Length: 158
Image (cartoon, rainbow, N blue to C red; front, side, top):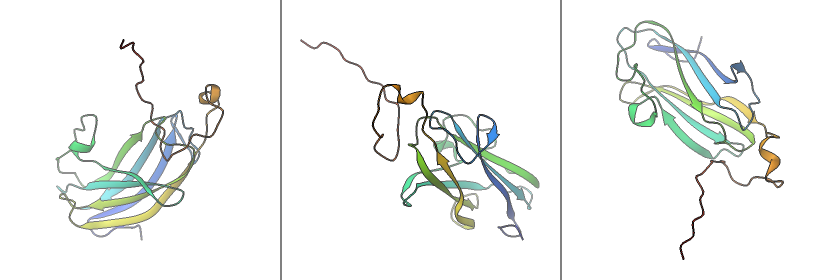
């Protein structure tokens, strides 16, 4: 009865921070998303995609387990998967999301991403909490959907 079909079935989606399952990660800690699923057909390649949404349902970003969307080498990219239980995971870097409620839409597609085998909106939600450590330099509310850390510099030009 797990979501999916005769090719792939979803087992679990979980949020981790600092190695612990949580629904309330802090803004200054990495957020790991784990997706466990059964591959039921030999030599299949699954495209796992996500949308991360804010509290009012706006998509903040989308990503997937393809080479062009990954900042590190993934040995499983473009390789056929064996039959069995698999885990695909990714990290939302610390200090990217602002505090507040977020949710994830999950997609599992065939190897070219052209056919949705599984599509689940709001598969999991989590509430990013503020960090007291970050609040040292700024007392107001951080405005915006994301909170990137950027490289700033000041130079004398005259």
